[in-house]
Length: 214
Image 1 (cartoon, rainbow, N blue to C red):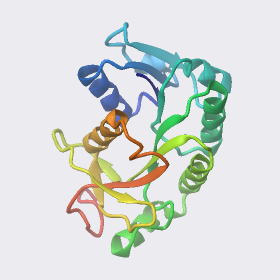
Image 2 (spheres, rainbow, N blue to C red):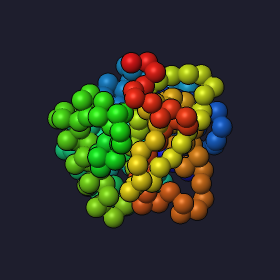
Image 3 (cartoon, rainbow, N blue to C red):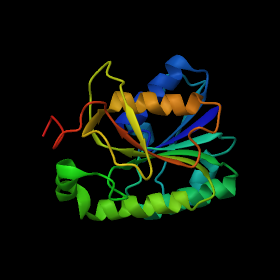
Image 4 (tube, rainbow, N blue to C red):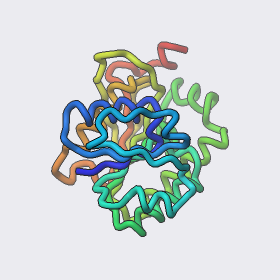
């Protein structure tokens, strides 16, 4: 499989790259602004860097040549999301996993939901996440949308809890390591289990008023 990672310099994207290199034989296209300065090729037989932003459709189409799956590390700019979707249609690539945030459907209940709204609910970035998710869900692509709760790092902690669209969100925090594990699990899943799905992603037993690190 050939996988395009958009936003390859991000923390989860870097973890995903390492996992793919160490645990699979997939080839990887790393796409990032100033990518040649920010990224280092570990295996030049399996990795290539594209140095550009998400708004360059021609560059995106070029990066998608022979790609089987696209991972979008951030959907915080709806113009970029539209360009990526258009490029996927032009390139004939259908499978996409995209990282978004909790709260885009007003699905976070209780005290934590109120805290989350105060922190990010009215921000321009949240508006962009909502619009980006809407475009992806209406794109006719084979998408999996990940609505991530508040992120932190903890080596070895790969525990995640999934809720479906229409269910109340669970989990005030989750590790980037767990999100990376979920993405790996989705990539390796051979059925239609995760297709046309919007998944809330939290950590089990963290239904708290706010993340532990706040």
